[in-house]
Length: 223
Image 1 (cartoon, one colour):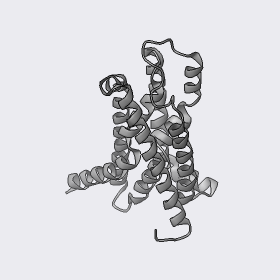
Image 2 (cartoon, one colour):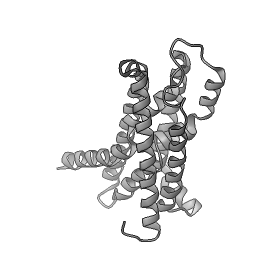
Image 3 (tube, one colour):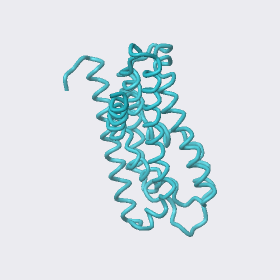
């Protein structure tokens, strides 16, 4: 029964986090920004994205509620503010013709493009696009659902399972980022433009949904 309980925790956490984190969609979107970089620069930026992703995800799991309490914040406020950030970033990418395909392969890398990317690794590439307030809210909710009444060992193991799901989301994102050039070559430039614009649009919709959810919880509305 213990194994079934932990398996249920893993499946529930995965099913709750995957649609919100959307590592596949985030991978397509970020790949467009990394186009034109040489292998060394691309790998360096991907490592930073993955590191920041883990820091945000596991950090939220470890000290999320403490930080919210320290600053007197509630989950709906985080959802509202973070959702607005997602909408703003998605709109920028929808209106930016260069964001979807980056620079053509075979051309020299623009140093300004590289510098701009390096300054955007944490915001907005890692947060709120790769892992946003919706993901943080789900992580905090999963953490709050863990009960220590059945023993510290079981509770800590449940925390470890949630952490494993966060790492799994990060691994899926890493696979799409590391194989991004192959994927883009197969679907072509026009296909990459279409996919990235669609992902940017749906990212905007996710941001709107997070904002609406935050407002509904703040004002106790049933939307």
